[in-house]
Amino acid sequence: MALDEAILDATAKGVSLPTLRLYAWEPACLSLGYAQPFDDVDHHRLQASGWDLVRRSSGGRAILHSDELTYALIAPASNPHFAGGLLDSYRHFSRGLAAALSLLELEPEVHAEAQDDSERHPSPVCFQIPSAYEITVHGKKLIGSAQVRRRGGILQHGSLPLKGDITRVCQVLAFASEGEREQAAALLQTTASTAADLLGNPPSWLQAAQAITEGFSSSLGIEFVRGDISSEEEQRAEELVASRFANHEWLARV
Image (cartoon, rainbow, N blue to C red):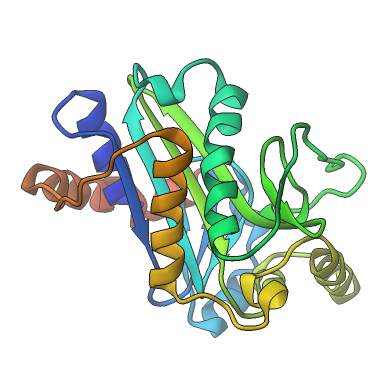
């Protein structure tokens, strides 16, 4: 998370090129959205699980990062691929995500309108409700994305679960009762999925990464050049780890 933020700073200043960053997590990690309440987490259960906890710069609800591919699209606000408002860029990049899933032999659907009934069914879980221009396959949400725009830069995060139990996130979130936890897990099972659930034999992380890269490149006309993290980005990331992402005050600030 700190490295994504460091790249955001660098691209906004014109020091670094617009970036597509693809990565995985070790150990598994629960990430909270920028403004999500810290009390949404059942901290005793999280500690017992051995999973990490972080707060994202981007918005949205809780995601358990495990057995997945995470992407980060990072660019200055002037970049034409982020032209217009939030929904404009979601719509634009949904074309690349849909193309990527097609390369993985999935059948993606893009939702033009949000389907958020959170007022009737409040939930701390990101994958429970498809938002505008997010991706589903056979009616189940497969990619969750969130964005932040500030200081002249834009960062869009997204998560593609490859395998595992999609309901595991409910194990470490706070619910009023175990009955509500079970109900949330059952609902999540009906609204979200992993690539393995849909394909039987899931793609490897490398196959998914190649599909994401090719999907954005072919559908949006973006030419990617593999690059390394700069020393300036690494240094800034270390500063951000200390001041924010490994700082309990930042984590628990909401």
